[in-house]
Length: 156
Image 1 (cartoon, rainbow, N blue to C red):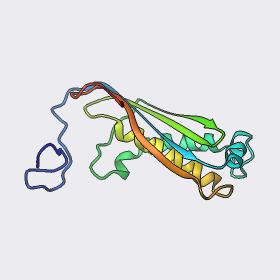
Image 2 (cartoon, helix red, strand yellow; image 1 turned 135 degrees about the vertical axis):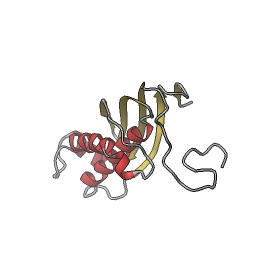
Image 3 (spheres, rainbow, N blue to C red; image 1 turned 60 degrees about the horizontal axis):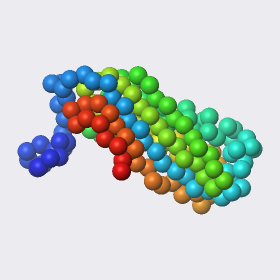
Image 4 (cartoon, rainbow, N blue to C red; image 1 turned 60 degrees about the vertical axis):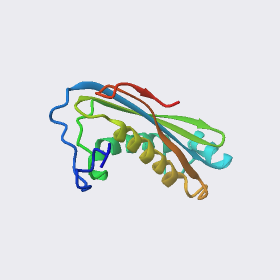
């Protein structure tokens, strides 16, 4: 199978052997958005959501998720993360999340950043669903990555 590193020569799934790769500083940034009613966004901004501080809980959920990525994604390597941050931009019609994951290791942290962003968005939905069940999560994507054999990359 050409170019697909999680498939062996016979097309069977396997975990990639990264033991010969060099340790480098690595960082990945991912983002996503949840669109919602102005009422739900205002309730989050004003701290009026009955379940509590939506963004504080979503931040912790995203960080915890990054640390458990290998438990969620079957062929993902467990990584010793050196830092994870989850930041929010709350607007009148939704929340944009940006998650950054860092490590010094032999494999990248793109999946950890993407997982952090996604779980943070799911947590916002869970905490605010009583106000707006029609919220829409979307646009989750890798924004940038640094380090490793493939070098730096930034979304166009």
